[in-house]
Length: 323
Length: 313
Image 1 (cartoon, rainbow over the protein chains, first blue to last red):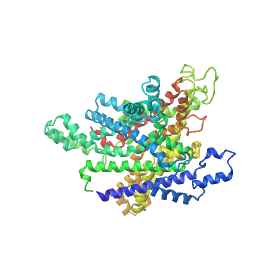
Image 2: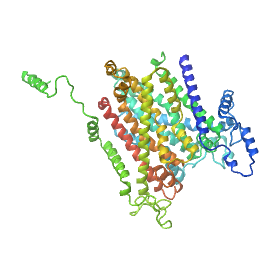
Image 3: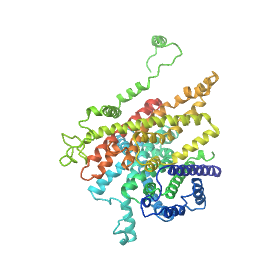
């Protein structure tokens, strides 16, 4: 087990290193440079510009810059943001918790809803409920997340005014609310972005869950449980569903990259101050250190997601523990 | 159990032996097309999806001849701006007084065309990479697959967004190239798995021992084993690329401005969201129905290509 864990962590490290290197090459190969907003200012003397570049180490050859970045990461120093004039770590510390909140709520809601729906569909395949929710799920899975987000915003926040349109807190009232009121305020702002992501995840999960349940139903252990006289409900939910949960665990690991991608749109549309928005802004302002650090963080999340899924899989399936 | 008389046994034996096929040859398996047709006949949803896609492709191909107006023609900006759907303009007009129906049909050309070519490119790249890795094995395989792992660890939309935002607006061929170059990672994994499985099979050993060159064995005998999953992945991929392209366009990094793509149309409509819903809803529904139809068809395709599942629960 320890050997497996170490090997996977080592592989993960290689993957993260590869992603960061690739990103470094990519952003430096592209046209444009940082400080574009001040570069056009005629009052900026060449000396001042050179000093600005030297201050952030941008005058060094690329291999040196790359080496410095890696050395900094190894010491836990992510450098300075070029556009916000503060440490990258502080920039990330502001954005990451918001994204994690959004993602974890979406993951939990999406998987709980998707598993329940898929199990209910799989328990009665071909029923009217199965066909109706199945087509709905297929339709939701076909929708681009940004369009779904737009429609949700238009109807729930725009036309019916049930929920706040965007942001994470009420810009005016939030500081005056009681602690419970503040939590409620964030929760209200969370409904639309997390709900959009959860809907998309749930649609995918339910399809896999339904298929997985149908796959184990003909298995001998299910027949044995039935032959022993266990009630139908117990057979499906206690015996079959538990075994049919295995493929879903893998899906959980795969959901992380999908969520990160979806977060770019959902955070952008609902003005949720998280990593998705941060990355888009950092790319636009050529804030190299922030781009590198957030890409690195994103790939760490992806690798960890896969690793946790594998561990859960091993915990759930005793046959894999010896391998 | 019906009565078994000597006569019926004889008739049975006669029926078996008088079969026109030479002895030893299995009955011909129905072709994939025949199975698709058989499945569609019993399945109205699949039939609807297939007809919708066929009509859409036809409409996209014939767009210059069947659209009521030129997609970029501006009508009277004062009188005809953001007109709701009417007999004259079935899907209304947009913020520049252009006919939305014409733009959606021309947008279909761009969105479908881009996706189709990009997926073709991605399938070729992924097949080459995955087949090479699976066939080579050992260290090379491990290295090639770790590269794929690293590339898969970056959400595709972020990768695309990074490239497009860094390089600014892209021409259509550049966009297709980019979508193709970022779409092959999953395909390569799939092909590698099929190649690994096929390497061990008897017909591959047979081809080897008959003296076929390794490359010939790979290309002629092993890679074709991946055809069915490749086809399914490609069909899913087209739907995916349509969505990705629309997403890029929505963020402002799509096909350059006056040209219509579904993503551009949704983005343009977003600005006039509350007053003119049809600008966002019409292209959105077109996009969603296309992807939905593709997904429905992929389900049927899976059944047709994997007949073992046909009689499943």
